[in-house]
Length: 167
Image (cartoon, rainbow, N blue to C red; front, side, top):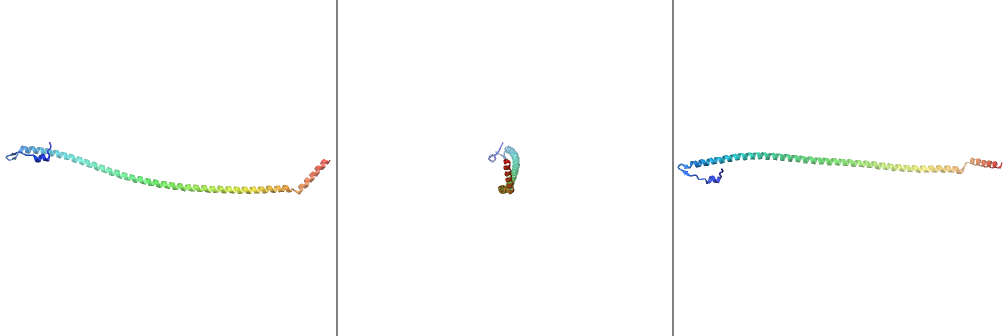
């Protein structure tokens, strides 16, 4: 049974010689005791529920805080990893550029050396051709001029041939 504030305010007791009717007051008191006991029990249960829910809320808030901290830490770590990776990438790229420049410089130096070697070989060839031509011309002149003793020998040989034919 439940009694409301309005029920209590509107409750009228019958009067007897000494005041209100004892049985009606006792009955109301019993009902009030029952209602107040039920209300107290309900209040206790509600307070326990509130306490449990408060502790659950506190636990969830703690979890939320932990998750927020974890998320922030993770974000910082990700940012640090990105920064480190970017720096390492820049270092690798710079090293690659440096190595490429060294290799390119070596290639240019080697190309210049090859051109120099080719030019040297061309000069040697030209010198060899000139010297060979000079040697050949010298031998040709020697052959054309002839040896005077050789001419005498040839003249004698031709006379001998003539005598041999005449015999």
